[in-house]
Image 1 (cartoon, rainbow, N blue to C red):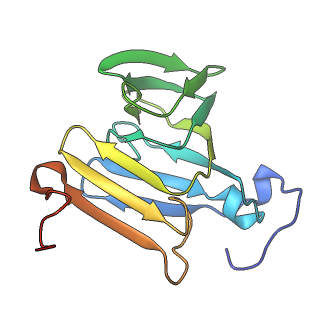
Image 2: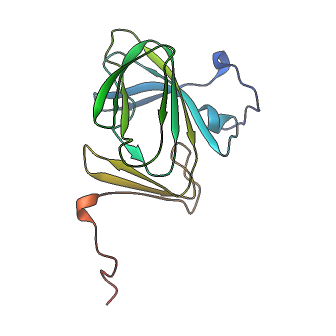
Amino acid sequence: MKKRSGPILNIAKAPFSKWKHGEDYEADISWLGHAMGSRKLGFNVAVVPPGKRVFPYHQHEAQEELFFILEGRGSIRLGGRRRRIRQGDFISIPPGPGSAHQIINDSDAPLRYLAVSTMEIPEVAVYPDTGKVGIFTGTPPGKKPAQGSLRHFTYLERGVGYWDGED
């Protein structure tokens, strides 16, 4: 959404866009925080079809997240465990080790949830399933990168030492 909607937006008027990658990742998402001009909070509503998930299993090193299940049921991978979730559940995800998470719609009906996060910068996201790490500066994840922002993904195993290349 290019135009800022202002401080009040009814969900019935929220613009949703398709988010899809491969066979496993799909949702209709309304990036409400961005649309409403929020600067310190990110928030969106995601509608996940049966059998799909929205994002890879990941943890944030700086940002804190909250999920509220608006409709449906599914499961969340959280800190290495899989737990059932359903309408009315609040899920609090603090930053740091042990907080890796992923919401999965393993039901036969759509799963709708509200996601809220602090927009801490710089941010590092770790992806335990693939061994990747993402580094974000300038613009938090979930917003279109501003000029001069850094978004870099690499594999942890490919890291270099602090003094590498400095001789």
